[in-house]
Length: 234
Ligand SMILES: [Zn+2]
Image 1 (cartoon, rainbow, N blue to C red):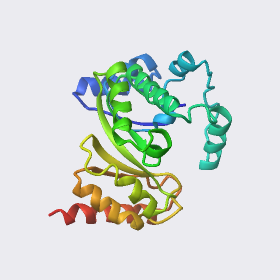
Image 2: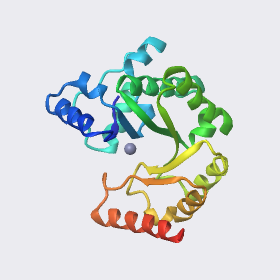
Image 3: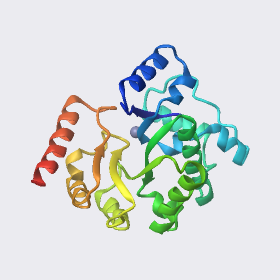
Image 4: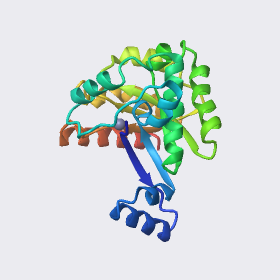
């Protein structure tokens, strides 16, 4: 239950050297002591298994070998997590577990959020309930962490559907960034230009997953699109 991309904050050279040494020595306790920014976290898959076991009794086993594709990841999820947390209560437990894990890992900045489809699925279409679920877990478990709330887009979704979902998110000042992820081959990134353009005008940080399964050309197109959007602002 650990799919994370962690960025280390170079607070100072000593901190940087401690982190390098801890990695070289495979010293998990020392790695955890270094302050870190986790700028991309799959909260459903990034939470503390121990916390969830205490809360629900469900003992999720760690991944035993690397997963090589989206399909393998979905199959692992279905077998080990299944429908257990597919409810408002369950979703909130996953959010809490993420803060618990981040705290244990020495994360000082946590960028985390919900898929836009999760609003109707888990939070009764109520954007305030969604935001409060993250903020409450933040305050209860790790108020010392800086929370950066993210809007998540699944790449296989129809653009019109995403725009409908997003209409509830636009204008809400709780959000910091927007990210595109999922099946990279589902549709070209250019299809998301109008969404990114709106997000930029809302002051959100723009992010996208590329080159997980795509090609070098997909990376070039994503960078060009982002540059175009940045330059449009000047
Ligand atoms: Zn990701």
